[in-house]
Image 1 (cartoon, rainbow, N blue to C red):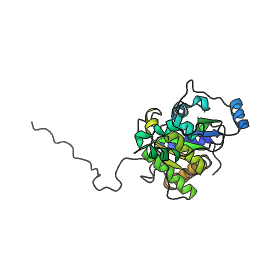
Image 2: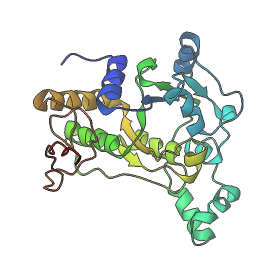
Image 3: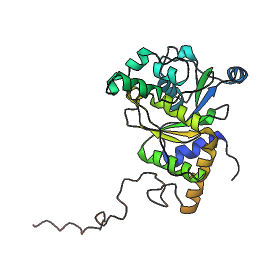
Image 4: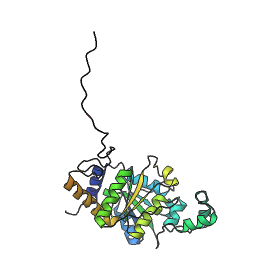
Length: 266
């Protein structure tokens, strides 16, 4: 299979998995020259006001634009800690008390969250088709069966099984994708209380993070399955829809043509 462009990959993923949102290409900038090149060559948007990271992703996944965030554009202390733009302080720990038993456990949990190492300069989020650089992570907001297809194809393509997700209290979209970047492993994780409302996941979307280096392999595995079976669906082999809501081989779900209604008595 010839190497596909990121635009081709996005089209396959949108069409075959029936995604509602564009896959998000995440780029973490640690190199000033690379960031300067991005600013010089790429059309991008800056948040007009400081936003959470999951709010910035709305631009990429819903509006189809590229959003660039530096420390001054990020208004979420959880994400700032995860990106290394803020130290874990007493206020951050105290802010997690509602999730846990006591202050000691709050500190333990906060300090165990994934964090970027090195000096992060900025982070950009784009629809996958519009990414300028090879993405560090590709982040999907999807439903249960779309998530299942993505992670199963990642496991098959990389020959890794089982998947070991990493999920934290709070910090879903930010820390969940930092984990993918730090480990080079796919991740599937639920919305946190912040991303549920701030990041607009009221439809119950599930998060999937795929290492950017692996996204082409995932798409190739999806296409190989489709060629072998005639459809991309894992739930119903040979069918196109990835999450057909019907019981497999259930003897109760059988339909027979009924008789024509009898003529009414005169």
